[in-house]
Length: 418
Image 1: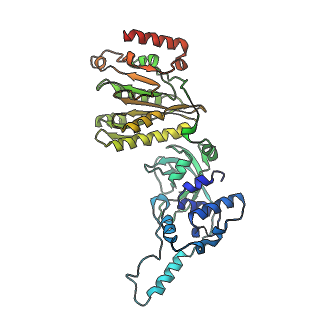
Image 2: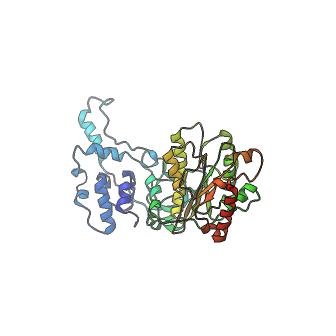
Image 3: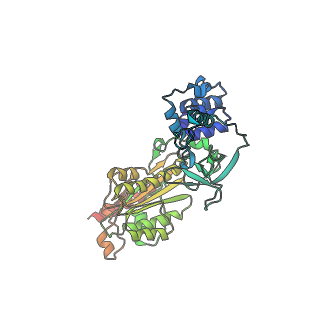
């Protein structure tokens, strides 16, 4: 339970706090307001006496605080709401029962019931995330089943979970209006203690350095060979493939995605935002399936959300020390701030993980470590490589190809600019 610190508890819903309190065998936890319940959980873990507010229970609630507590208590796992009984009006009741009968029903509904406690059931399975940030532990992946366990959005965020993670932890039984059991806490992620992930810190706060491990493409395609040796990029690079319409940007991006996906210990994500419907089909038939995809008919907000969803998954993976690549086609339809944020997410983390972003764009955004500029005239005439070397370049190429390689690249760029 070392991961249950105050910040984590304050981010959790009341339903999750109830699940934690049940696991800790805290008496009368349903009668506590959220703040008092957090203090009680913290005190219970440290072996201290619970605060006085926790002992007061329902008696400590004022009439003004009751609606707020009721609203909080309606939040439940699986997206369901638990409705408090005994708050209905008198319509439909016999006149003989009157107000006393209503009061009796309310009192009965509010009285906590003693439920026999069984030993906690430990579940193990594969994480599948939902668009709203929550998810499920699939116990028999990839197909859903009635034995799957709900994961709250707070738990997903706390442990930086991504699709495909293997997690273990105790579950609790579903409440009245819930279909699935819920995960009480996450003990391990991919065989490692969850506390290690919680202690790594936020992705934005981790130390960053320039990319130094080059991606080798190993292709016989003329343009890909030119990209590999004249505009090199590595793990953690920030790359734009720029050029006019019909320069072949999307085709080159799809080639790069498939090559990188075949490399060891690299996870490739694809975000399609503002592409042609035909291209959606081409990506769906390829080796790299889009994590999110909308056509050019979608609004800028929808395109922003598609890219943000995929970037968020890759950031979690990189923060845990893995190498992730996000390919984006295209940045042109996004809001300018969203496009810059997506590109700026790329970085080489000093602890070993990396996030590489390769995106198509009509022009460079600024801030790239590598610009791959394509010449539409060369592409349309069938002259390859279709690389505009004078407009292309890599920042600090010596870290990727060595001093001699950097000098050779500089010499070729000088020749191309004449």
